Image 1 (cartoon, rainbow, N blue to C red):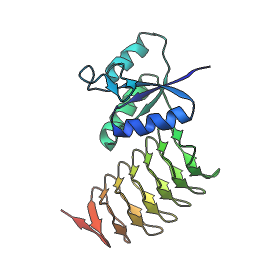
Image 2 (image 1 turned 180 degrees about the vertical axis):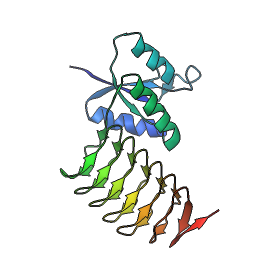
Image 3 (image 1 turned 180 degrees about the horizontal axis):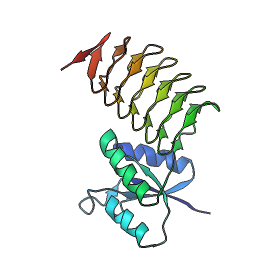
Length: 210
């Protein structure tokens, strides 16, 4: 039986997600709001916009209801996921075959775990998150909905990351640290103190920036 997956968002991020999906046995249909100006991404065909995908679903035309949103921007990813959920799509998670995910970890729908990532025991990852290449999410961490943990980030045990926060590439976060909602932590930072909501911070140690 052919497994078909609709991917919303045809960018570099979408290419990597499509690669993961194909390794998991899916056939890919892309949808992107740049259509019809953009009709292909590499060898994959773009079939229409996100609105076209919703219209097809509402018209009861036979298509797969399985969908992943491949958009790096946390706000836009949240908007698209909510739209698709409201229109009856099945938001699935994808875990790269070379990722390591504990049997005791919890990963919600719409999250994608990239190659080399590690999610250890009793970590919880919310809806629509990105756990990017070689990121480490240690035991008892909590990643709220629509957060993005960038490549080579290391979250020590018990770290909490708020909704729609972005943890930049190569950042290290000390154990039991709490990072609020809608935060941006700059690349290569070292976070050793709690970070409030709606804050941009970077550096080693990370400090708040205006």
